[in-house]
Picture (cartoon, rainbow, N blue to C red):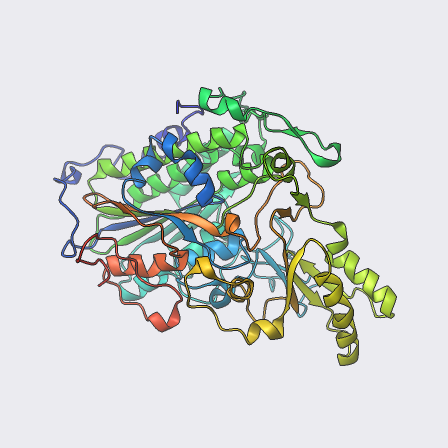
Length: 559
């Protein structure tokens, strides 16, 4: 694919590399002769973890033959094309919580992007997965919460690395706060994410000088208008307008043009990924990550694919442009790492998959694709049942698939409400299943391969008794849980189906012998795999994943 967007990576690097030792690669960092990676090869000095938000296995397969940059290089390593975010709540926060903890959301405690804590010390009982709701004057609404890692109940790889050797550096940069926070863990040296003003970090914590320089460069890019991008020939066949339900306009023919200061459109473009990668590269250089005695961890969360998927779907010309830009930006980032001569290992995966908007699905071989019935909205359903039974309102709260009954109900009222709600939901033509928290609590977390999990297995891996709803519903395949499309939100993920669960998992290291294995490995396997690569012991009783052998033949990388 030809270059289709301004290379923000190089622009931002130019603004940030006037630091410390300067932008030139030092002589002692000259690239060593490439040697084949074997079981005896010393641990890499730098681990790089890249999570591409909403890069489904389907999307990766669709564009794989077109990649010629960074994704092509990673695809020459060890490839698991059908990895799994095995759990049912396939959202951003739960997915990112699995990647570097080795635990399903049932263990990490990150059951959804948002859940309800009916005992929360504020009127707003909705809790964001990456906030501290005990901070006075805060709300779960965007921009009004206090970002925090407090909800993550387990250590990350970075936490374990620092516990073993405090000299290990952990830096996390992402397009979203929840991505950066869930992968960074509790002891990271720097954690930051994109914001309207460039970059943001935890409240009460200042950006480091280099991060502030990067933030200024990114803010300048956001403030600069961008004209429509040139559509490559291979994207032209996807340049078809799709009319949204309800006369809400069209998608499918966008060119990613945006006005000055339009942060949302900036996020939904390769520019945003370039900004994150530029910042990560600059911080690596400033901190000399990978150049010390300990192995360091650089975490990168790329969110533009998710914003494009939500705003215009997965099969339009906008996604075609995004895949071209992502491939190039990752390639430029890896080239920058190559120039240092550091021995580094990379893993790339995704927090969840995604599905196209139902309007385009109905045009392309799935005429029954639907938007969710408004009657399933927790507030509307609760009101109807409360009025029928004479119960106090609001009867329940909910978001996604988790529904929470009011704590003001007596035992008899609760029983009556469930007796009315559960049959009504189970009879709905868009509902695949409804499971109570008691049923899930009694169901063990599955140890079987993720591709043969039952509905109960999937929902159980997302269930936490103190955070999940009183009952959980799962919609049927290709029912989009957006009742009415709106600007920037026409398609989504979050289902129990494989189009949302399957993601690629790619490992690459210079000298590695590549191979492909289509078996159903899981994202919870990534942490123990990387830990083994650097000789870090992990208590397998405290995780759900296992080490994946990255060496073909009788040797093994699992130490």
